[in-house]
Length: 245
Length: 234
Image (cartoon, rainbow over all chains, first blue to last red; front, top):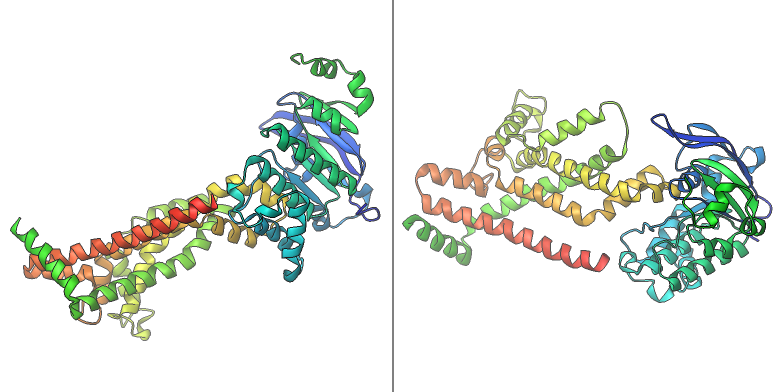
């Protein structure tokens, strides 16, 4: 466990809404997400899953309601920012070598210059990328790029890691590697908040499920009962593979 | 046709023979335009990046003005710099009029909008792609500027080349602020203008061929370097 004592969690969403030009995309989401567990955000396309991640991570500002960290403790915004990381569906890597991409983040974290290379190599090694360290990040395969994005998030030692459909464009082997990486983060005490379309993946990874439908939070449930028999009609239809309209 | 063949042989002879006077003219042209492009890049790249990333009132108008300035008439720029540097002008005491420094100044003014406007476009496009990731990493603003400029380096090279082409090809500004003084401020373009007015068309044409060859060589070199690097970096 890396951050037992001074974690920025829990994350509290209080009546969080997001509207664009009067059209509500997320409506009055209230939920508390505790540290340690793996939360899967599920729902059909357009349900607002990615939006929920971006609002929680602070990439977007809610048009109503509040996002708070640390159970009301007055955390400095800078610290809240630095204890989070996000892995996107399509990783955005800089036009430099794989190891330089990690060193870049270590530089942002004010890690001493002479320690960056060693730490970056350790992170690459952990995700099986050590041999590719000097390769330009942009010419790596899709799976390698996503693992590099995970290695980059690893050095942040985040309290919480957001993942937005991290495997939706990957083949099974690369997907497995990403899931193993998520295990590593979880084992190190990082809270996982993730969206996925892959039901099998959700079953494998979830401790807890948030189910969204049409911008509303319909169900918050521990994973086992959710997959056995969800309480809401929408989630039942979703799991049965029906169209939810 | 006769003029053209004479011009070709003259150009060839001048290039082979390394005529010191012609070499001096070529060197000055490269120094003035190269210096102007260097200055314009140092100012224009950060300026373009800031315009791409910053949000402030009047930004739209500034972008339009900058884009419009890509087409500034060189003679008008030359005239403005001339007025600045002339004895009675605000910078008259520097005594720069009719020196290569004045020519660099005038060409910098010509090139700056091109570099800045194209850099703005390149950085704005990159921000589309990188924005969320960089904000997720909490990258400070100035680091964002540096990061995007570095990652846009291949496209920005083209912007700088466009600036160099503009500087090397213009005659109006350097003619006015430089004065086309033989051995001091005579560049290839002012020499071409002079030889044309004297009626030595083959010589003028020969100089023109050398100028075009020079610009082509610079572009080819940068293209090759860019291609190789781009292929390597993806």
